[in-house]
Amino acid sequence: MFNKSNQTKPTLDTNRIPKHIAIIMDGNGRWAQKRHLPRIAGHRQGMETVKTITKAASKLGVQVLTLYAFSTENWKRPTDEVSFLMSLPVKFFDNFVPELIENNVQVKVMGVIDQLPTQTQRAVHRAIADTSQCTGMILNFALNYGSRLDIRMAVQQIGSEVKSGQIEPDKIDDQMITDHLMTNFLGKLSDPDLLIRTSGEERVSNFLLWQIAYSELVFTNVLWPDFNEQTLTNMILTYQHRDRRYGGLKTSK
Image: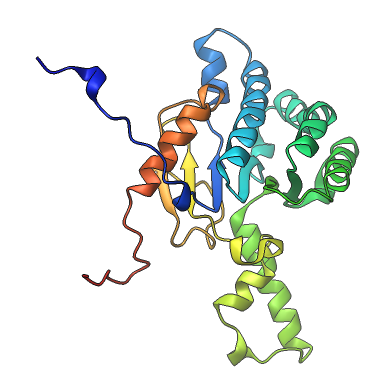
């Protein structure tokens, strides 16, 4: 008789951990609805998941974790929900920054920050400053971020530089565009190796459209508040079983 206990569980290849993981954190509202709770309860639990996954990713050796926290389209949500979402960074950073420092994690935030409420801006800038000396994983929040806006702003800036004579049009290449995007501070790590979306939706929702050109995309039905260290491990295992050729072919040995 076949004994399931004799099965060998797949283990992570520690030499092939994705350097940059980006996550579209989806399903907070549905998590709350399933429990007959207000949507804000899902967002609150989702922030606890952020803490769990940040520490798990750092422990695994991930170098950059980019989380889609609030999109430029999220302003369309009900006013009370938006207000709550804007208050979350204040509460989150106030109690989590000491742990981030303890784990040598540096906070970065990309997006149109100056359009956020003053209190949210202060919390963001304080977290960035307080963790600036950390040299481990970068925890990068996409806050008031939209990829089409990101690309449009980059094109406008490049256009301005062409107009002023700083650059020639025929010198515009992929690297120049990359260098003008909001992820430029990540250097060679600006493009995610792995993009994860939770809650069963299979779209990228205006997130890092340029940067994910060759990212591995993994979708899971797990709602973000239920996402845990084992789920992250499973997503990385899926990534490690992918054949990444970047448009080319692997040569046979």
